[in-house]
Every structure is written in structure tokens, then in C-alpha cells.
View 1 (tube, rainbow, N blue to C red):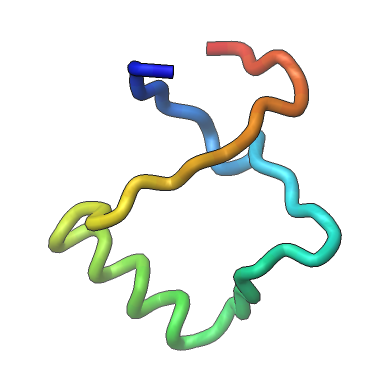
View 2 (view 1 turned 120 degrees about the vertical axis):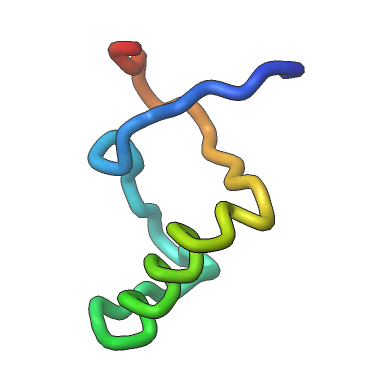
Length: 54
């Protein structure tokens, strides 16, 4: 795939044995602040599970 699309965070589902643990704590707030200030430094890759409404 050679294009980028935006999807809502709500459309991303977790899966068993997901490699990244997300805690809703101060570190998540710091990460969100960093992304707002600096942008996303590494792209995210998600697999299409169901048809998204774009």
C-alpha cells in the first residue's frame, strides 16, 4: 500500500498478545503532549479488520 489514510482511534481494536502495553497514566499524558508538540515520529501500521467509514 502506498498511501496514508487517517482513521479514528476508536476504530482500532486491540488483539491478544499485543506487543505494546498501554497504561492510562501520567506517561500516556506525556506521550500525548509530545505528539501534539512534535508530531508523530514513527508511523503506525494497522491491519484492516473491518471496513472503515472514511
